[in-house]
Length: 396
Image 1 (cartoon, rainbow, N blue to C red):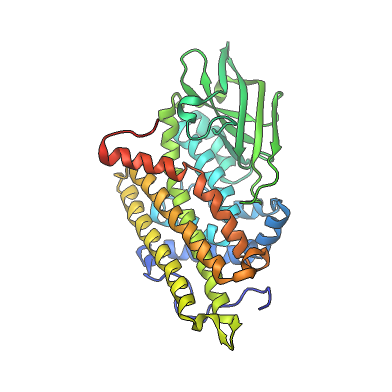
Image 2 (image 1 turned 135 degrees about the horizontal axis):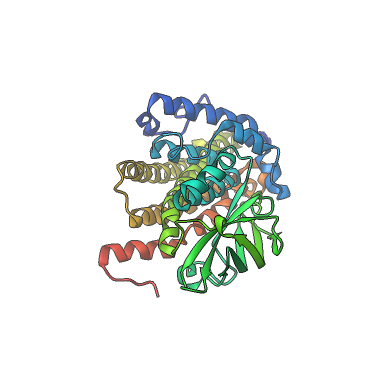
């Protein structure tokens, strides 16, 4: 087999939407999704593997993404949560790294501003955020604080007249090597509550260094951030970000987005595995002619459909305004577990070719590991769900 992707568009169910979930979208939403899909096929997929191999972000893509106007489809543009989820899955299907870039900028960063800023702050900041003229990052995780960051935030904020002084460190902060702004969550030394601040990355005392040697989402520019007596004007403290409970308003939504990423990455695995199985010849027959291979492909498809079905229903609950945190937690835990299985099956179908990025599957397989872990680990999301169904907390 050549390293040129096989064109499977003439196969049955070529779009991978086996249960026709897209038909639940309005006509306008279907057209918009088709527009984005065409953009991704033209601008993102051809460069995705090369950028991943080099560990470099395609900066020239940002203005094009800005023109496509993808930021805040629900909150600003009035689309449904179902459309927004399918959109995020489709971007992930093309490249999980670009989906993560958008998830950080849109869901975490812009989402923090939309949920926690005053109207005056929103008016000042959001236009450039929506157009991608200003790129944002989200500073919550710390070198010594991951799953326990709710109570274990070590970065501090100290009020000093009409300014705040921030000190501490953040880790795994996506986009932070080139972002213009970053929302930093820091514990106020006066009341011990976690508060949110918009930090200009050019301020004295702020520094960000790229995390090297990753095996997953290599295109994403994750960074270690250091804050050394960074002086932030009081206007840049998010007016409604005054406790970790406020922070959770953002995380509940972004956890849904990561579950949609798990759907999209399974779709990508199915695309590559099916194409390979149809074209690759072994023992004088295509791999797809072997029962065990068909079983693996159907298992990937089944996992994808099950994950999509859960997410469709959850998006409907979100649109109705009745979705709960524990439902998001179960979705993230379930879909990422199915994703891990699906990408492993896909890699197996490609055999040795599944461990080189030339064929796409190695990248998909590796990217799954990051998605499995961020926005709440599988274990933490399982315990959040377990607490909801038993009334007993097992989180120590």
